Length: 322
Ligand code: ADP
Ligand code: MG
Image (cartoon, rainbow, N blue to C red; front, top):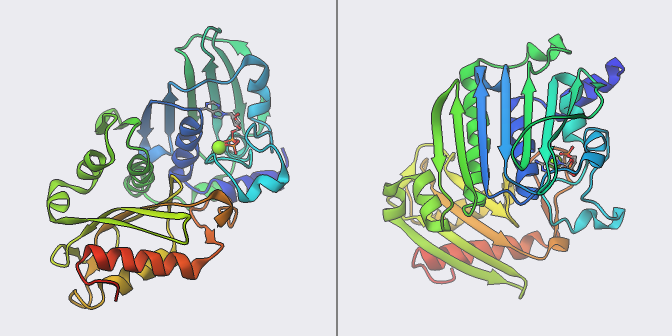
């Protein structure tokens, strides 16, 4: 692997949170019902993600860690209509370029196999032992690129960011169970649940009690659901604003603005609403290909989405369609 390759990979996988996000998305794409995450030293020393999904057949294991070897993208034209979370085939090779990666997998009825990549050097596929599903271990992030390692923050800060990424995915996938440990200590334990239960578990019972159901839609194709904190239930920061679009947790300026506008007349300036909004719309109405590994997206009809979100929130807040 060339230095340029490693630098490019470091731009794709910039910190442990990105590793966690990519590996958990892969587990979700594989239909996992239960996902276990173990972090050590904020994920810099170790990220382990185990799932009970469909597994990777032995014959595809070597390919899975190669660049652009996604099994999820039938055609280029599909880039605007993506049903899976991953589609670039960049995560595993990028992680393998900058860390010590091992992928152990077993399909139902098959035997387990393992492949490792260390600083871009791939091993042969060997027999292993393991339960059905996939176990991905990432050790010593950026050991191969010490310059990048210097940009990491403290293990504490990296752990917070990694757990935040995990919680956002857990919020979007309530029917999947999630467990996480940090340096061996349990930090998250979420049984498969309904959306309301998952929101209460993640955002707190206070929020659940003080929140209003949001329901709405637009242009026949958009469905909006979720919970919005009442005007009295606000926070000093905007961290508890969750947006999920077609099962993807996103940070989207358009949706954040819509939330702020909807609450403008009912809350104290300087405070921030708390809300978890779930949007479903036809995949070809959203472009998720804005930035690799980022949680950004672009709506084909942003004005329609903004208007529909504002009126759904205003209805929930009892203001009519302002
Ligand atoms: P992408 O998710 O964009 O396809 P990745 O590099 O993340 O690319 O993964 C490459 C391929 O490896 C995937 O397309 C999938 O076939 C396989 N894969 C990775 N992780 C898992 C997993 N946990 N379970 C099943 N298959 C997986
Ligand atoms: Mg992926």
